[in-house]
Length: 219
Image 1 (cartoon, helix red, strand yellow):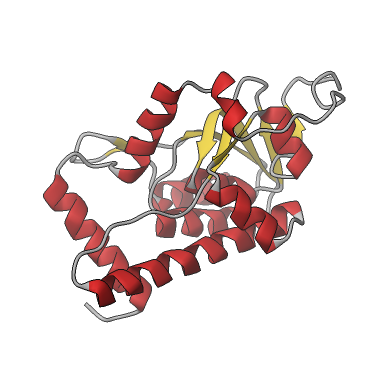
Image 2 (cartoon, one colour; image 1 turned 90 degrees about the vertical axis):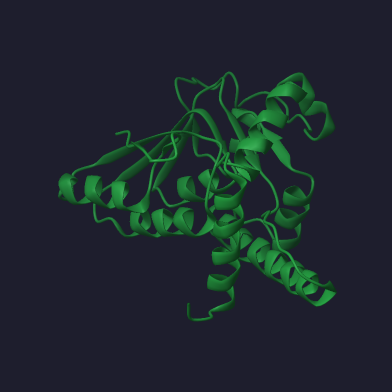
């Protein structure tokens, strides 16, 4: 199953309401979510993760292109996560923006560090890794091919693999992953994650709203 919508800002997006509608229509039947996403809003991604995890039927997340940033958290909500042999998986620190004096900067830092920990909690449930291990991987902006993602527990199986890829000796990935993903492509994905909206005024307003929501303040 795929789901997407075009917003008034001329970029394609999938909102929690889109997933909720598809889940309701499925009425308990098995669902496969086809994932090819560079990520997006943290709150929306966590909401989608929750809806998928609470679905009564069997759920599968098939990563066919890329699962990066909050898209990886969404995948963790499925009963089974599968990945195409040529796909990519990326985890990193939560990012955002803030304005104000040093006190506001300290608050923003605290919020982001806390957000990293909450994201790592979802990864811990999926992988069984420790918080420190996961935060280290997020700090490094870790890119994984399918075999590495299976090895670390983010992915359960490689689509179409008969043991050839998963039986190979582990390969360490960090700076060396540039062989798999060009710097140009990585930078493009980073920009899409950090600046999904071209209009900077709208982006700043959305980020301010996000900070207020994370503080729990009433608007």
